[in-house]
Length: 156
Image 1 (tube, rainbow, N blue to C red):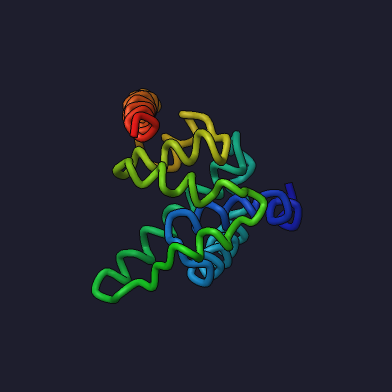
Image 2 (cartoon, one colour; image 1 turned 90 degrees about the vertical axis):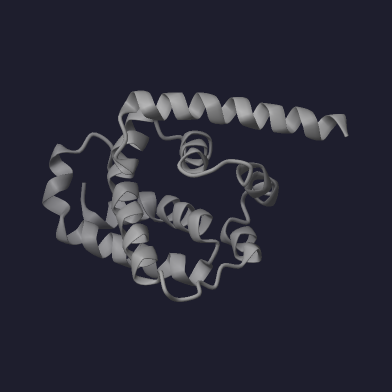
């Protein structure tokens, strides 16, 4: 796969993931550039990769972790309205954010990856550095917590 096609096919997904995690469009855009720059320099690794999407999201995740480490002592400008602007194609994005806020990390990322990005448990395990079984287990418990939360909300 050539780099231009890789970018064209997956830039929106990488941006959506980073915007979801950071809730800041500008920082997400910067990290998308860093992600694809790293992907370009490591393009030869793509030959042995089963899922280019998971490979790119793993790079994006690592760039995000690096950014957060660098920014640990600084205030991050996280604005909830940035998330809504990040994806106008999903009208329920704000509601999805409210629902996912009921979960702790990494369950929030796992649910987002499974149900918004359509990743497999194996791909999420590679991205997050977790065994596939752990991803499945965390997804199960996260679904159960979300179901209980939604039941409590509808009873009000």
